[in-house]
Image (cartoon, rainbow, N blue to C red; front, side):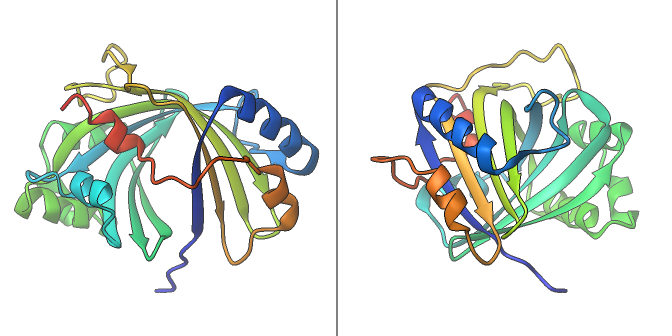
Length: 225
């Protein structure tokens, strides 16, 4: 299998930064065609094991790490994805597999025996880790995303904000599951690209005085437990 790792920058920025960078991006990049009015809402359910391995590895800056999540967009549960994100030497890659709403709910409820017979390897992998490593749903993460794309270099630039946590609620298909602001989480600028980052995008996302950060929405949303 040819694994394509992508470069990734993250910056915590101010609202004024967002206004300035958004204006520059609109001149050189295009809004993601899947976004409604330039943005969409994301709900994710993150998994971890009994020792909080994914959380601890993120906090400790472990060089090679992975995390599992289930997510859907704009409240549309007809398209749910199981995803595994892997990091190696600062580069990232992502694997995904579709889930039905019924399958996602069964995973949340701990009904996992069907997963070992799935024709999707990623579903089988999650089953093994839930069965033998104690991996389980940990927290819901909600946020708003504004995405831009620039095709040369396969660049994707996003603004993520209004980050909220589901506290102890992991029933992420339940629209009545209450979420609250995740501490003092602000606005996160993410820039992802393949082999090269075009200068026109590098210039557009310049944030003087801002440093690349290792911000994790999952870690931020675990501050309450």
